[in-house]
Image (cartoon, rainbow, N blue to C red; front, side, top):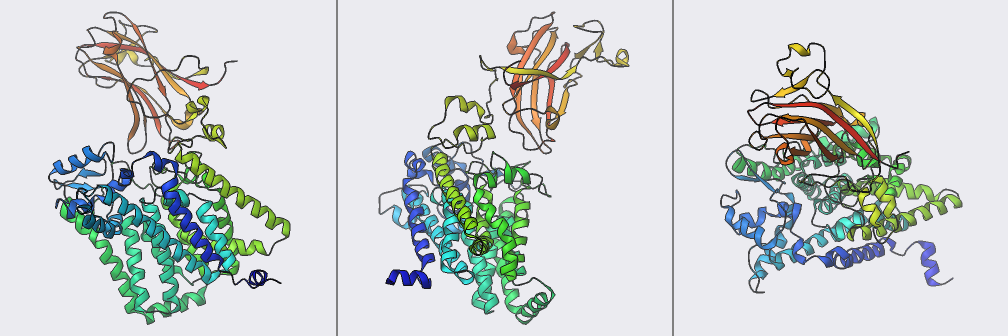
Amino acid sequence: MTDLAMKLRSNTIPWSRLAFVGLSAAIITGRFLLPRWLTYDVLSILSWDVFGYYLYLPARFIYHDLGISDFSWLQQILDKYNPTIGFYQAYMGPAGHYVLKYPMGMAVLFTPFFFIAHWLAEPLGYATDGFSLPYQFSVAMGCLAYTVAGLWFLRKILIRFFPETVSAVVMILLILGTNYFQLTAYDGAMVHNALFTVYTLIIWFTLKWHESPAWKYALPLGLSIGLAALIRPTEIISVLIPLCWGVWNRATLQKKWALVAGRWRQVAGMILMILLTGSAQLLYWKAFAGSFIYYSYEQGEGLRFLAPYIMFVVFSWKKGWLIYAPLMAFPLAGFIFLWKQKRELFWAAFLFFAINLLIVSSWTTWWYGGSLGQRSMMQSYAVLALPLGAFIVGIQGQKRWLKLVFTLVALFCIWLNLFQTWQYMTWIIDPSRMTREYYWAVFGRTHVPESAKRLLEVAEDPGREYLEDGQEFTSRTLARHTFEYQGADEDPHLSATVVKNGSHSFRMDSTVEFSPGIKAPFKELDAADGSWIRISLFVYPTADMKDNPANLVVTMSGKTKNYKYKTLSLAGDSLRVGEWNLVTMDYEIPYVPDPEDLLAVYVWNRGRQPVYIDDLVIELLEPGIKP
C-alpha cells in the first residue's frame, strides 16, 4: 500500500486545511476576475449602501463634520466619484443634523483599512479625501481579510465536532454551493460577509468559554455579540448561541445555571462588553438626532413581526432562499441528525436559525435590494454549518445508492450556483426583478433572449405607460363606478343634468379634492404576472383643464406607504370644454409584496371650476392569446 493510500485510510490528510486554502484562493482570485468587477472602475467599492456604512469615517476623521452641517464637502464627493444615484444614505434628523441611515458597525470594521489608506494616499500621489483609489483598494483588501478570517474560524469550529473530510465537504458546499461565494468575492463590503465572520467568532468563543471558562474568552464573546448588533441591531439575537449552548434537558439546564452562577463575574463582563459596544451608536444618535434611540431608516421601512413574508423569503422566484440556494435544504434536514448526534448543539443552532428567519421574513423590503438570491440569510450559514455537518455524517452511514444520489445532487447544486453567479455578474439574472417565467427563460443560458425581457418585474418609470403594439391580452372588467345608487338624488355632488350614461354623474369643484374611486385588494385581482390595468373614464370639463387642473391617479398601497404611484394630467389630453371626453390610462401592475395591498383608482381635483366624471371602469389585461 502506498504512503498516499495509507494516509487516505488513516484520514490524516488535513482535508479541511486544504479546503480552507483552496476556497480562500478561489474567493481572492474571483474578486478580481468576476466579469462585473472588470466592467467597473475599482472606485465602485465604496458605493450605494457601502457608501452609507463607510461615511462615518471620512465625515469624522477628514472633514470633522459627523453631522454633515456643511453639505458642500459631501456634494464634492458625490460629484467627483458618483457613488450613488440620489443621496439616500442619510436623512435630516429632528435636531437639524443629517443622521446616517445605517448603524456604525461596518465603519468600525473598516477603520484600520481607512487609516492605512489615509497614511499612504498622499505619498502615493492621491487625494486624501477618503474616496480616492487607496481608500477603495484598502477597504476591498480588508473585506477579503475578514472573509479569510471567517473561513479560518469556520474550519476551527467544524474540526472540533466532525472528521477532517466532513469538515472539508461542509466548507466546499457552503462556499461554492450558495450565494456565499458571490457575497464575498464581489459584494464583500456588504454587511453579510462581515457578519458571517463575526458569527464564527461568537461560536468559537462560546465553545471555548464552555470548555474552559476564562476572561480571555468571556470578553471577546461579549465584544463579538456587541459588534454584531452594532452592524445590524437585530443581530442581538446572536446572544441565543451562548445562552442555549450545551442545554437540551433539565440536567443540562441545571449544569448551565451552575456554570453561569459560578462564573457570574465573567458573565457580567460579557454583558458589559455588549452594552459598551452598542453604546457607541446610542451616543451618536443622542448627539445628532437628539435622543438615545432613533429610527434612522425611511418611513414605511421596518419590521412587521410574525414573519408575514416568510414564503416569499424562502420560496419566491424573486429572491427565494431555497430557489437560488437549493443546497441549503440539506442543513435544514440536518437538524434531525444534529439532534441525534450532538444534542448539546441543537437548541443553540435551531433557535437562532428559526428566530433569525422570522426576523428576516418580517422586514417590509423582504427582498433586501439587489442580490443573488436571499442575501439576508448568508451570515446564518456559520450556524447552519453545524446541522450540515451532521447531515453529511448521517449520510455516510446510509446505503451506497443514497450516498451517490446525495453526491450527484450536491455537485449539481455547486454547478448551478457557480453558473448562476456568473449569470448574475453578467446581468442575465436580474438583481431585483426576477419572476418564475423569466428564471426559466434564462435557465442555463449564456444570453438573454429578446422575448424574455418582458417577463421581468415591472421597472419603475416616472412617465406615462403604454401597452406595446402587437401584444395580445385577454380582458375582463374588474370594477365599474357609474355613480348610480339609492339616494343619489339627495347627494349634492351627484348631477342629474350633465350625464354621459344612466341618470347621474359626479360633480367635482373647489369643495371636492378627491373623487369616489375604486379600491381592490391585490389578491382579489387574481392577476397573472405581466398583467396591466386599463382605466377608462368620461370627463366633462366646464373650463380649460390647464387652468382647472385635475389628474387621474392609479397606485398600489401597502399598510405603510404607496408605491408605483402614477398620474395622468387631464390637461395634457387637451380635453374639449363643454363635451364628454373619453380618457384612458394604462398601468402595468408592479411587483406586489403583500396580497392585502390595495389597487386604488380615483380623480384628484385641484381646480375651482366644475368638472363632471362618469363611468369609471377598470379592466384587467392578462397576457395571452385571445380565444
